[in-house]
Image (cartoon, rainbow, N blue to C red; front, side, top):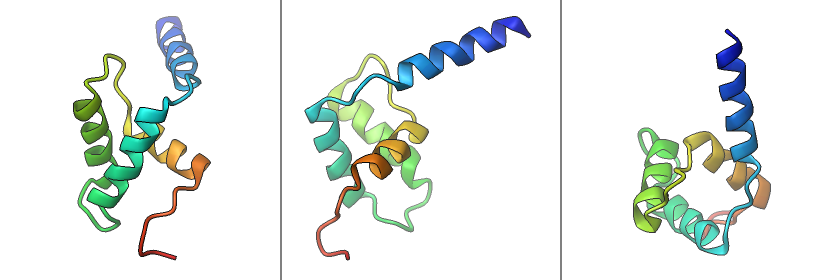
Length: 79
């Protein structure tokens, strides 16, 4: 059990890493590419960002959702 807590701490520390401008730009593109209603939307968005930017520390769908809510991205054509 203590090992699991350590992993959670490491994950929590990783999630505090600020997003780069390239990552934010790719998130904005991914949100347009995978609109609401897309099956497994946030998984698709995370995979898209990770593949396009060839990230070594992969973004999770939870991180993408959190960042999307944080920056309040406005999708063109939507109010």
